[in-house]
Length: 260
Image 1 (cartoon, rainbow, N blue to C red):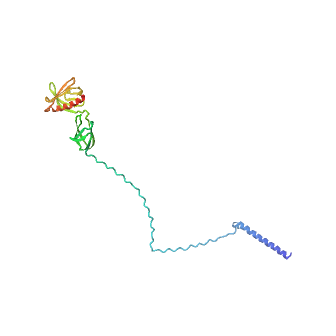
Image 2 (cartoon, rainbow, N blue to C red):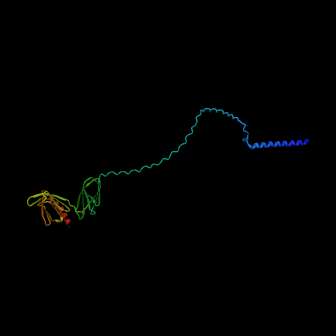
Image 3 (cartoon, one colour):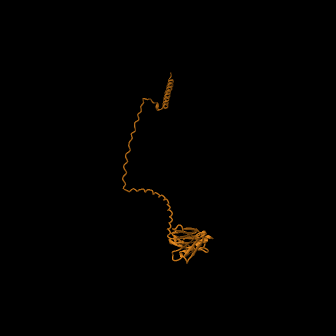
């Protein structure tokens, strides 16, 4: 074999060896580190950590430290509380009376304790509490006289001219044919009544049943006769016949009104 042929064969073997090495390297790269042989142990040295030097304390400052002012808090708005409405003052209790006077006859003249007040209806103010007398008159009617008890405050008084009113009474002596008895004659709009302890002489007669009713002032005698019945004669122990006269006048006036 020639020298040139030997050189060519050596070159081919060298190239083949290089190719094998390259292929082995590539295979090792593909397998990665996990494919290393188990018997190869790698111990990594722990890194040495050095602590940083401690910082020197800051020198104390003698200058005063300014305090930061606290933020001012805004005041909460106050609720507006409305004052309660003022209480109405209680009027003082009246100390005098007030009479509102009217009548069933318009325009009647009214007097209080003989002082003319005016024509009805009329009001009397500032009347002192107590007993007072009201007088009234109207054309075509009998006068009215009433006693009223006034108290503090207002009051109504109605004067009735058209109303029949009668409340009369007188102490009498009933004359019998033999002897006498004492009692009292009374009269109201219904009639005349005699009240006595002697029950047999007592009576009650309506105006419609009275036939005659007479007074003899000089003889001090008052006679009453029941229609179609008994007659009664009365006198008085008063020094004159005035009590009998007044009783007869007031009762006979009403009796005539009722008889109309």
